Image (tube, rainbow, N blue to C red):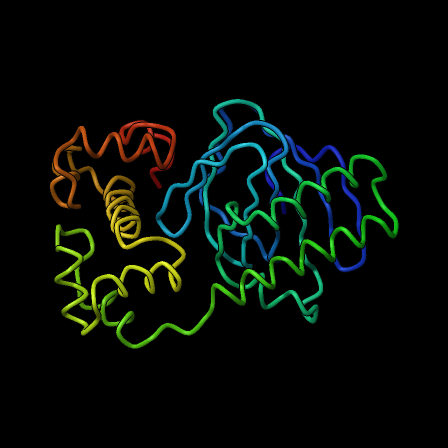
Length: 255
């Protein structure tokens, strides 16, 4: 089931296509979907929270949701999405759609999504639409194959043995797992898709998000507990990641 107001719905092969509109101020509380799907933001912007991480989504953003993944959304102004649910679990792309993966920075995927939106708007159905859907699913499968490249043992140790919300020097982490710092940074980005410093910021935002949503801790205490310098630093991080300050984030998404 898709939340919001469905203004058009069709079926192409193994995919159900829904065009959904959301009113400004709409809050979609934490929920799950039975089938994996791809969501393309055609108009507007929104903030989504999943796996405890807020993500501000702008027009053109493509998000892949695996089945039964919990997430919540907030539309500060009206928006419109095209959602593509993969209903056939035997489809070759189903495995790729069974893992959480925000892929809005993948240029090939963005191009495939833009083409799909164009074809859907122009024709609504037919062989051209099916080819566009197949291209989108193939791009997702390729991206997932890269994303699931096996992690080396030293990277797993770095992720598991160090508290990434702390101000641990990256050089110390690299030496702690027996890797030269330069190679550590390059290989970390290759396997994780973001730099060690970006991963640290994400870890702090995730930890702060959990405290904001699951506790009544003061903002200053949340900042101190999750590695931010102070409440101002926490606020800046949430405005950047979620498009809103932490107090607003808490009021919208608290369970």
